[in-house]
Image (cartoon, rainbow, N blue to C red; front, side):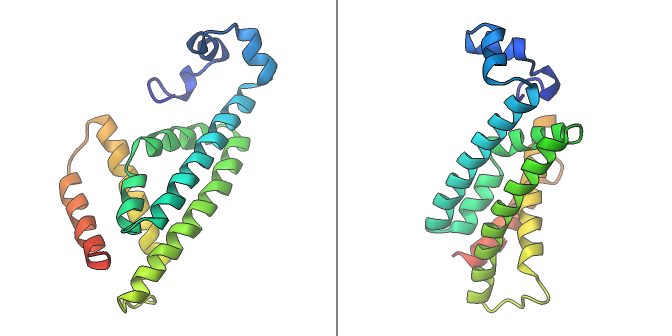
Length: 166
């Protein structure tokens, strides 16, 4: 999916990549939706585990920025594209996104409260969404060869995070 997009992920190609016969793929995953959901769930659970580690580390906001800016976010974006065509994927993404977002918002809320930042003027859920979305769009654009404003945006976010987590 990362190399050629979700449309290129067929049961035959998955079988070839895994070194097994296509029938074995179909035995464990009767449909491509079943396979996609298994991959999505496995990746989402792994990402939630990485998020828990990030939240427990020194500098959780910096760690969350990094987490949203990495390879896993590219795969997430590919699943988002797939979700436009498959309801089961869409529902699963929404479930995991809520879990991930709630934990991220809690960290942002705590950091803002610790620094006396007006949470009415700067709602933590909005600030969390801005940082997450920006990290993902930079990653996505970079994959397309677009770099305009990336260095400036990353520097801006780093300055913001450094104020909250010196």
